[in-house]
Length: 90
Image 1 (tube, one colour):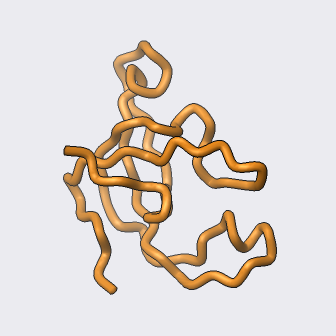
Image 2: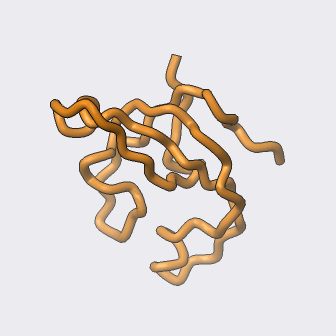
């Protein structure tokens, strides 16, 4: 299956607060960002931590503005985010 996103695509992280491990930091949940690059295809760490079967999926470097994450700042933060945790942003 082809990757859903490419560099330059605007995305938003999912805004979930599951009772188990997730690789999306709380401060980045529901935040808009821009895909910088595809970092490869890796098993979803959330499922691996719970001992669930998983298949590799795209992991993206996503850049977020500090203002979108923390309400202030003129810098950016780049995080590795699995495709499962991203949605297209219009």
